[in-house]
Amino acid sequence: MSLNIYNIAGLVGVVLALYAYACVQWRRDFAKTLAYSVLNLLNAALILVSLIGEWNLAVFVSNSIWIGLSLYGVVRCLRYKTRERAELTLPKDHRRTSAPYPSQERS
Image (cartoon, rainbow, N blue to C red; front, side, top):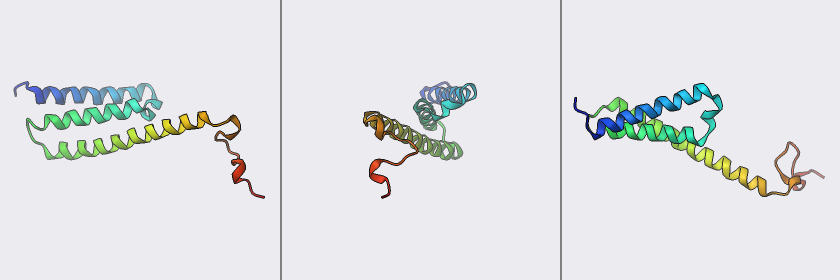
């Protein structure tokens, strides 16, 4: 086995995957962050790049699914942050609470 650019990409991907997993073990709420989803997206993409050097169907399938799930996590985090910013711009009495908005109150 020679150490070419594809193997290096795969190794970097594995290091990122292990780092993301370690971060979740150290701080459980890390799994809810944008950084976690981006790390998983990058590691799966780099591992897929390594398949250019040597094809493996199982690795391709698992990392393709991993990319899809990571993209979902990225979109979900971005939507949450957008919604959170929008709520900060609302007047204090209209921020999300357990009580309905005045327009939603029943007469």
